[in-house]
Length: 131
Image 1 (cartoon, rainbow, N blue to C red):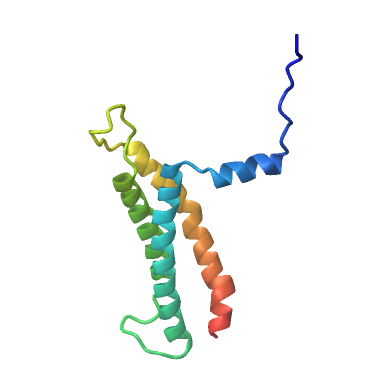
Image 2: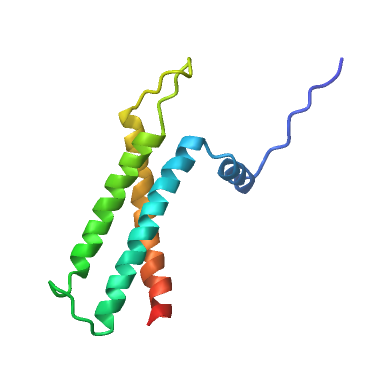
């Protein structure tokens, strides 16, 4: 009779690295949708900010606070909508595509930290190089 050996225990870091490398496709799609929208809008915000910092006059004056608020709302809304569209609910047959509110919720929950992190990188790391 042979003794059954247990697999070696992985460290916390090894487990997290494995989860990162093998992320579920719906999560990757949700993050990619929100990240792409956030990067495009952050570039637009930085361009607007750069024009105002260099003394440019734009109609409406300085609306950076409103632009930041719109940035957050648009990233959350579009990230949720795009995730709703590209992450179908799993079905057994494979022929019917069903949408679920859970896909939209996944997009919303992915968009919240991404919107924040992209703007932090844009304002704290990229903007000083542009001045």
